[in-house]
Length: 279
Ligand SMILES: C[S@@+](CC[C@H](N)C(=O)[O-])C[C@H]1O[C@@H](n2cnc3c(N)ncnc32)[C@H](O)[C@@H]1O
Image (tube, rainbow, N blue to C red; front, side, top):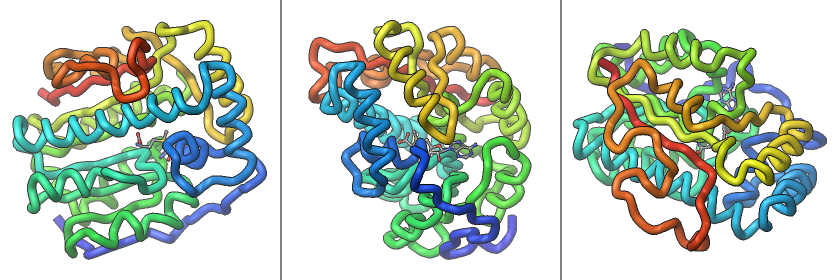
């Protein structure tokens, strides 16, 4: 393992910020209630929200995704003994980022954040400012090049030891033609047995009529694709892993199963999640 950088932004290769076309990271930030978005992002988000019950509901849905991310990190630390996290498709910093949860639960945790978006890069310092030196870093990279991510992530993560690969809200930004399953497989070939894969993915078979229409509107508007998938299609991403109970389930049902997230009472959030152990 190389020398761990205290902080890093990997500014090389930073792309331009295009404020004229909606971008997934900024649309998602608006949906979460953040402040890092342009008028085009807000317009696209509102157009989609109008098709599926309004922005308040969407906001609750994406917050439930963030809450799952926190539950998954706590599970990995306390029940799986994981201390290394590779969070790909990090998004614009918000509350409860992976390192904030991980370092609180286990101060010896290490977190490598990865995103391809120039706006995320521009805000990456927020991810790093409260992190102790050597615990957290950020790489601007593309999930389409898993080897690049592992090679550069090796500055902080020891890839001979188990790693949690976090693909939270990422894989629905890839079309089948991009072969996201193959990208996941390539990445998992670079981590040792005892590593974990965490996935959350928008569902294409829950409230399908409204959500397919809304996702198609966003898919057309945004720089990135947006592709909903069925339960079986999402489960296929974890097919090479031993599934952690309760398997690939609707987000409210994952460890511990409980009530719907605040604001979603009586509503099934169309989001599948799952965690698997690399054999
Ligand atoms: C919906 S956000 C998810 C943010 C966070 N993981 C969460 O679940 O709260 C998706 C993120 O994936 C990033 N992304 C999309 N395609 C990517 C790619 N090919 N490589 C790396 N990141 C990508 C976007 O820039 C965006 O920040």
